[in-house]
Amino acid sequence: MDLETYARLKSDLDPLAKPHKAVDGVRDTSSQDERYGDAFADYVRLKTASPDLPGQAGSRRRS
Image 1 (spheres, rainbow, N blue to C red):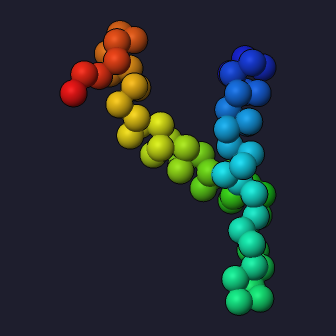
Image 2: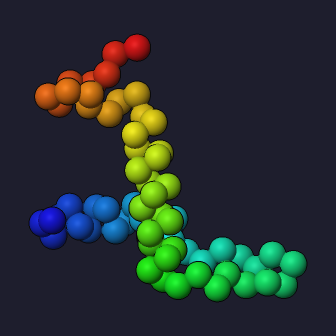
């Protein structure tokens, strides 16, 4: 992955990978790696649900 692509992906994942706020006094015990893994899975789900995602040869899917 080139540096520009890495920077773009990291800027999208960083907000998704922040530790969850404490719920009922229980803090998020996930490691940073686990949070980034979960963030990446969420990112893929969000991006692949987009109607603007190219479906083939860079052409947007048409509904």
